[in-house]
Length: 340
Image 1: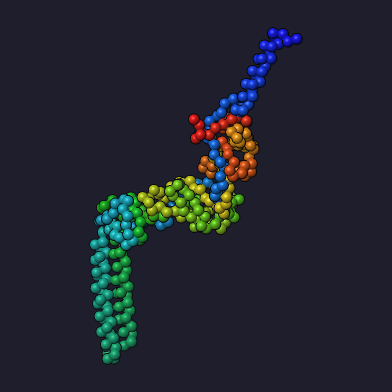
Image 2 (image 1 turned 30 degrees about the vertical axis):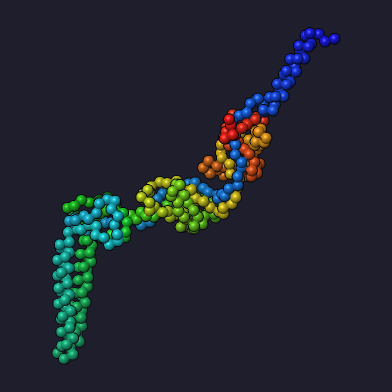
């Protein structure tokens, strides 16, 4: 016989069961969590390594005085772009000019003497020895003229190559000795970046490999060292980068280098925000019919905000790409772009 108490109990139990059934259709939490959902896509990938490097000028020099004297003219300003052969600085050329003109006059005189000696020799007025002496004097005078010309050229300092001027290291009117630093000249349109990679990557490095310093600055490997440094177990690499746009980089600077090696291949890439780290294990939330279930995955290399999935997923699988922190296995989810 069913009493009134029993009736009340069964009615309450039925209500609980109905509520539970309704709740299970919406996952563990009883409501849908709004998350970001996206399909897993196949993308091109190339292995890479991040390291640090130092920038060096492809051509650069600190010019030093090759003559002693007083600086009488400075033709440049720091930052000027100059051409090869352009006059940059003058070191009191008056003495050098005087010596050159004297040597030039002596050379002209000795050339005339030699021509007259040739005539006299043919007329048998002078001996072979006299003719040889005249030839020697002509050649010596010509050599002295060339030496004087070289000294004059050294007093007029010209750019050995096209580049960008640095600071003047002397002042107008300064007296400079031989070897005094005068200025820095750097070719900045292209720079060389020197960096090192661990020994285990040595066989991967090739001339022509791509390097990236920033989204707008990239280059190619131009040289790989022939030996590993026994002290550091690192291999030296040089790369050439284009630096023509507004010269954003300067020699001597410290840079982060991303070196790409090996063949380009197709991989599954997902955002790092989609991967749940659990020590050595990794999981993602795979979405099937609106329900998110955890799936163990094997991961590979990370690149910026992306990570390679080596196993556990296939192309086209729907996964939660953002919002995994608030989820539990079996929760109902809806994509943020479909919500409301």
